[in-house]
Amino acid sequence: MPFDFNERIPIYQQIVEEIKQQIVTEKLMGGDKMPSVRELSQDMDVNPNTVQRAYQELERQNITFSQRGMGTFVSNDVSIKQNIKSEMAESILLQFSQGMKSLGMGNEEIIKSVTDYLERDDI
Amino acid sequence: MINLLKYELKSRKIPTLWVVAGIFIVNLLIAIRFMFLAPSLERLANELVKNPLTTDPLNYISNLDPFLLVVALISSPVIFVFPLFNGISSFRTDYFRNPKYLVASIPKSANQIIGAKLLITLFEAILVSVSFFLWFTSYAYMLMRGASRQYLYMFFNFLSKNIVPSLLGYTAFLFQLLLLILIIYFILVVFKFIRIHKAIKIVIAVIAFNLIGFIESFFTDFFGQMSILDVKVKTYELVSFHFSSTPDAFIVNIGVVVFYISFAIALFYATTYLIDNKMEV
Amino acid sequence: MDLTNSRLSVSNLTKYYGGKCALKNLSFELQQGRVLGLLGPNGSGKTTLLKLIAGLLRQKSGEILIDGVKPSCGTKGCTAFLSDSEFLYSWMKISDAKSYYADFFTDFDSSKFNELLSFMNLDETAFVKSLSKGMKEKLSLSLSLSRNARLYLLDEPLGGVDPVARDKIVSAIIKNYTENSSVIISTHLVDYVEKLFDDVLYLRNGEIALFGNAEDLREEKGKSIDEIYREVFIND
Image (cartoon, rainbow over the protein chains, first blue to last red):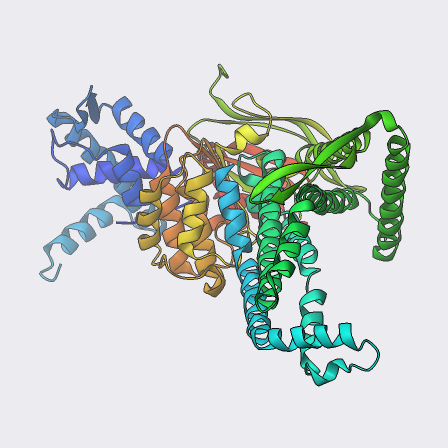
């Protein structure tokens, strides 16, 4: 599927984020084989070198590892998934709290509105 | 090289086939006409011998027949004009029209490309001239069919006695055709580098042609006068189905031959050098 | 054989058309396996540069080396130039164009071409004359990409082509990528193809206005390659 990305941010970073997203949502499980650079670049319609750079970054962050002759695999380390999850949660929280605070809400008010929202039946 | 020849043929085969077909059809019509005409011509010939002053040719043949013969003769320049035209046209297509981008990007040298063009032009010239010659001799044969053996013998003897000079003359004709094409190629390429008005280019082209003609005749005279360079070429005649040599000889000046060949080679390499090293697309 | 990874090396390249300077002292390098975006408005010298590399034009001064060799008969055998003008013989059908390429280019892959043809929805028996502009572009691209060239020079591959066809062309270029070949794509439709570029060269009036790695530029400036283009050429 063509990847809809923002051309103002390095594309490889967006690919890294996308992979992280897939790991957190369990579309990609620990130990799964990653598609080859070529496959992914054709899938996403981007330059293979960009995908290569993304893969290198993922390996650098220990999210994936490569086995000679066999390909690249998602890390089996459970803590990796946890870390990604907390990282992503952190940036969502950052945006959220900044947004809520700009509405003039205090900490207590923020917590109450979150609790009320989550208890609603229609979400 | 084979590929270049193949595509040269592919580009040029249609006009060539039309021309050969045209020669075939026109000559077929004339030949059919002549078949009916032959006895009348013989009678006319006999009458002319008997009464040269009072015989009116139009009593024996219709107005159309000399006309057809003249048509056949007038169309003979096609032997020269058609290959010339085709050779120049294919050069202009490959170097000045849209295909120039394609031709400029294939890994073939100008030597090969131009060489292929000249070879195919030569092939076309031979094809057209041989078709022409075959038809013409076939009328002569049909004409003679009604005539006595003596005339037939005279006809073949005439042909055979003049075979060597004829072949040499034919080779010279083909050579001159290719040389003219080379001259035109050279001038066309040189003109790519001169940025002046079209009208002036025409004037320069005319001057260039005259200059080349002058150089040719100068060297022809210069070497022609040196009898030391003359070579006797034996002629043969057909006697009872054998070729035997005659005391006549046909003279060819080696100096002139060498001059022309060198001139052609120099033009060829000058043209291809300019194309490969200086010309832009 | 060239010892560095440099597939293409251009140094101090200058080209004049009559009195007018088209390229001035241009220098840059392209590594093997990389895609270079050659960006600039019409008349900036993009086509001139590509034609010089392809050996169709002669420079006034400076040097072009493809794997250490000057543009010549030899480099033509491994360089695929996609012209933005028509270049096929008027009597040709698509199958004739295929035979021509197969006969003259040893690196031409006929089965790859057949695949690309069906991908582009083109019929081999069609006469080239009868094709629309968009179809002609697709055909030209198919011919060039079916060669396993070391250097592809694609001059405005998306010009005059509808958006659906553009998608196909972009996909075809990506599919065609190998680590062994380098590609230069010149275009002024930047936003559409910027995801293809490894490096970008902004050419203004025959000089390099900006040259760099696409991703690094995005990071540095927080802008897309297209937005940077508008910045660079704001006065043109």
